[in-house]
Image (cartoon, rainbow, N blue to C red; front, side, top):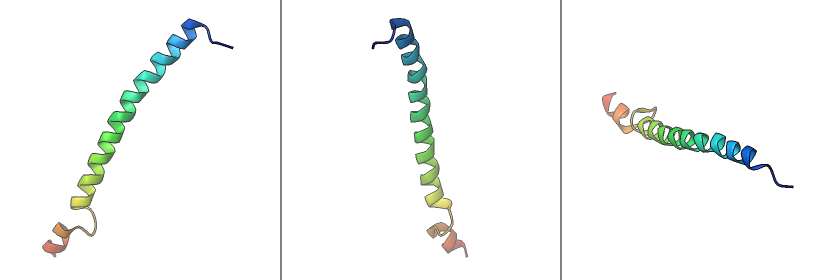
Length: 50
């Protein structure tokens, strides 16, 4: 059973926005993880300061 074209179009529009948000969130998450490696607990930079 196929969905009417109008519903299919609206579903595609609703999900396409979320993929952009998901990509942006993943990019930010990777950036925060990288920064956390540098300045986070147990990092070499913090050990040198002590």
